Image (tube, rainbow, N blue to C red):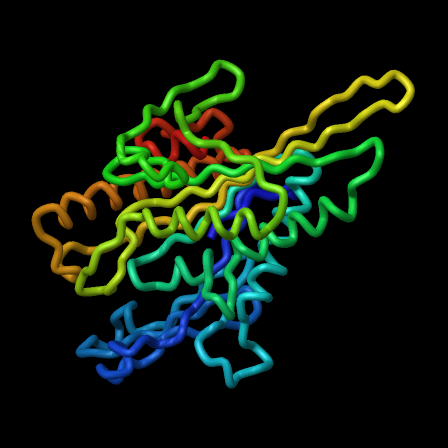
Length: 319
C-alpha cells in the first residue's frame, strides 16, 4: 500500500500477510514469510536446489510497516483491521485536514486480500469505511462559527483503460479524461455528490460496489477486473467574522482498490478475461514505474526524472 505523507519521504509502503485460504490449506502449503517489526523475511521454499544456490538463502526486506495478519491466535503480533487503520489511515486523515491531497491503494496478486484490506466486511470494516467514519467524527469536533466543512464523494472504475461512473445507475458509457490547466486531470461528467454523514457514504459505496466489474478466475472466484477509485473532496471553509470574507481549503483523498495483478497461465484467462488481464497488468506496471520515479525524485537521486503519468488512465487520474 502506498500513502503520501508530510515527512521526509513522499511514499510510504506497508506489507500485509493474509491467512491461508481454503485452496492453500488443501494443498498443505507451507508459510515462507516471517515478520519482525518493520522487516519481512522470505525463507526459501525448498526444492532441488544446490547448496551454493542463492535461492536457498533467506531474503530480508524493510518497509515502513509490516502487518502480520496470518494467525489471529498470535495476539502479540497479529495486526487486524484497526491496527492497519491506526498506522495508515490516521496520518492520511490528518494530512487531509491540513489541506493536502493524499492517496492510498492496495497492490497485489488477485486473491491476496486487497479488497478485504480496503473495504473489509460487515463485522470487520476496512480502511475506506474506517477513514470515512473518522472523517465525519473529526468534522463534528472541529466545526465552529468561523470554520465549516463540506464533504463530497465520487466513485469510478477503470476497466480496460476506460472510466465508468459507479454512482450513476445509467452510467454504462465510458467517460472522457481531460486535463485542466490549474486543477490537473479530471473525468468529464463524473458524479460528485454531497454527503452529510457516514451513512450517506456507506449507502453510495454499497450501490457503487454492486456495479463493479468482477469475474471468476482460477485464482479467485470473484476477482476484481477493474480499478475502483473512491474520491473524497473535503472543503474547509474559513470565515472572518469581522469582514464576512471566506476562504476555502480543498483537499482530495483518493482511496483505490486495484484490480489484482496476475499471470495469465495461473488464472486460466482466455478471450475477454485475457484482454482484461493484459490491461490490468499494463496499468499496474505503469503505476510501479511512476512510484519508482517519484521515489527517485524524493530522495534527490534524480530531481529531473521523467514520471510517466500519462502511460495509463489510472496513473494519469492519480497524478
